[in-house]
Amino acid sequence: MENFVYQNTTKIIFGKDTESLVGKEMSGLGNKVLLHYGGGSIKRSGLYDTVIKALKEADIEVVELGGVMPNPRLSLVREGIKLCKDEKIDSVLAVGGGSVIDSAKAISAGVLYEGDVWDFFTGKAQIEEALPVGVVLTIPAAGSESSTGTVVTNEDGGYKKSAGADILRPKFAIMNPVLTYTLPPYQTSCGLSDMFAHVLERYFTNVPNVELTDRMCEAVMKTIIDNAPKVLNDPNGYDARAEIMWAGTLAHNNLLDTGRIGDWASHGIQHELGGIYDIAHGAGLAIVFPAWMKYVYKHDIPRFVQYANRVWNVDINPFNMEETALEGIRRTEEFFKSINMPVRLNDANIPLDRIEEMAKKGAENGPIGQFLPLDEEDIMAILEIAGDKSLEEGE
Ligand code: NZQ
Ligand code: ZN
Image 1: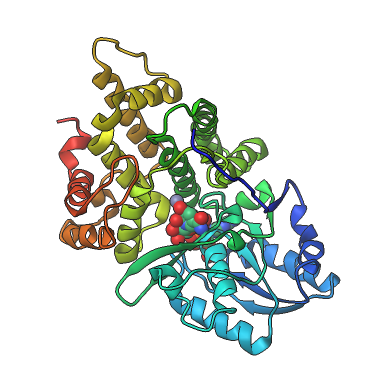
Image 2: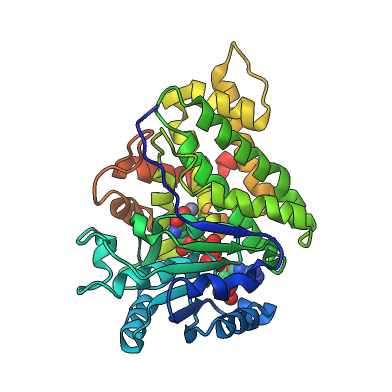
């Protein structure tokens, strides 16, 4: 196990009706808040009214900025920064999913920075201060509600990049599973895929002797696998929605990382797809992850065997470990298919004509991934596997 420091400072407020507490929680952070939200789901569900009422009751002045799109855009982040400066806003409330939260985080850091906020994403500057951010989560997926990261798309060039700092962790996250009942099945599935991928990124590590966190990762993955069909078949079932909502946070709040080094190449490759094709993050990961697995499994067959056996209950064939490893990969792909996620590029109508460009951009700052570092050629090969329809038929 590696040395580690772990401090997750996000206060989680979980359960039914908790959104009514948002005024009280925000009043500890400031007096004038930027209320940031997406394309309108919170207005349709009535959550917007609840939040406004709670903020008013807490005597908090509200300035609004809606319109965050999935794969949040840099242009809106810049607009938010200007608004916060003009209006002398002292705190940000994100009501929505990962895109809204990430946009809020980027705004919160950009307001206190003299230069252009994109500098944080290119590595030109480090985030050192930020306005406090609170969250009311409406979709379990990205884990941004208690993560240190923000992912933003720069429309100029189709770059989707991340930035991170401890200071970006939201101060609180209100998580009421009932708020997720209105999710369309596709968004529910994208969330399931993303949180599952967050655990996979951590699971495939080269660090030895990480038994406890291996088991914790396996528990989270098995919980996602068991509850995925339940949330899809019964969208208003509280218990399964609650399991999935909490799993989404635990998958990405860095607890499962402790003492280990995760991979993150699949996320890197997915960001290339997202930057160019605007595909939902979870859907992109369902395409990339199985392809990545097929490309790298020989690097550590025993780890892939452990994954197949413990997560997917595949019987170990002691005479053919590779077969067991491959069966685990096959079941991963089947899982993504069972929740109606695409598993090949053309399932998502993504042509193969720009994979060279994506591979180049993916590796432009050097190899990506820790489990098996990947250069441009490797990324290209993975995208080719992701584009190969025949592999799906097992040919
Ligand atoms: O915009 P509205 O109208 O609110 O609709 C949203 C959006 O269309 C809808 N939605 C959300 N909650 C709903 C709802 N519809 C009905 N009922 C509800 N309760 O769902 C759509 C998707 O929302 P989005 O916020 O984009 O989803 P998600 O949470 O999956 O976030 C994805 C973004 O997070 C980034 C991804 O790259 C992507 O840009 N990530 C952020 C991470 C982080 N900061 O730590 C880590 C992740 O790996 C990920 O990269
Ligand atoms: Zn993700």
